[in-house]
Structure formats: C-alpha cells, structure tokens
Image (cartoon, rainbow, N blue to C red):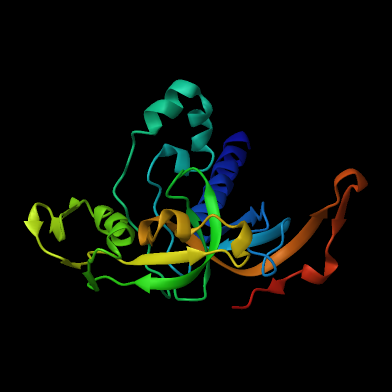
Length: 227
C-alpha cells in the first residue's frame, strides 16, 4: 500500500544518510597535487570508519537536508552554526604516510587531499624560540591562546613562557607533487577536527582529454594506494 511504500522510501533515505555520514562517500580528485600517487580524475572512496566518522557540525554537513542551505539567507545563517565537535570511535588513528581528506583551514567548505608527513601529538611539549616563533604561533593560537614576541621573549596569554603543551593532536600535510600543492607549507599544521577520512583505494579513474573527450583508465580499477 501507499503508506508502506512511503515508509520504505524513508528508510532507504535514512540508510543512505547513514552510509554517507558514518561509513564513507565517493570523491573525485580534482587536481594533480598528489601525482603520481593520485591522478586528476581518480574516483576514490573516502573511508570514514578507520578514524571514526565526524558528527555534522552544521546543517550544511547533513546530506539531503543541506539542500535548504542552497537558499542564500539560510546559507548565511548556517555559517554561524557550530555544533560541538564529536567523532564516532575509530579503529585506528592518522599516521605518517596516510593520505587524508580534510577541510581546508583557509576555506572549510573546500576538501583537500594530502599526505601526513609529520604529527604533533596531544601533550607534546613545544619550545618556542625566535627561529620557530612564526611557525608555532599558528599552532598555539589554534588552541585559543594569545602568543606574542616582545623583544627576545615569548609571551603566552600574557605570561613570559616559551614552553607550551598541546591540548590536541595536529598533522602536517603535504602533496606528493610538491611543486603544485598548497599544503601545510602555506597554512601550517591542521587539527584533527578538520580530518574527514582517508583514502585506501581508487575505485576507477577517468582521464579528461579535453576536446578529445574522456578515457577510462582501466589500469586503475580498484587500484590500491600505497605509501
């Protein structure tokens, strides 16, 4: 009957939402910043289970419901929405060598794909000096602290102190194609809150040949990504 069909459609939509939010989703690699590991046109599955899926931080993060944020006034209102950061338990943690998908710290609506090359772990001690001040200042400021250099001394929250212990874990990410990659060399370490998931396999790949059309790269079907 009609009611049964409506319930079936609703359950199917909820199931798709669960997969998209908690399990993973398909992503197209838009640039060559990760060549030769990832090619422009690769269709890659974002694995959200390994690190634990993030709960949505605003309405725009919820599939289907986010269509309402296409309306300009609602989109502006939603930009001021910031629900508390939460993650489902994962089966592992980001490691050096992993290729991760994350929200750009310069534009959180944009997803970037880079490789983790360095990690600053929670409770790690930072020693701030004149030669690394500009580099570490962003990292400490990310935790809500005011960092200033006065003459030759470092002040954190108004106190003369050059030692700081991190409250969260941060990752330094770089593109394999360093000559064509905007990464941590530009915006510094990224917090774990920005990480969406990781890449393990290329499902399939399409090479855009411009005026000559498109060509499927058959050699990249279910291609395993290596470190």
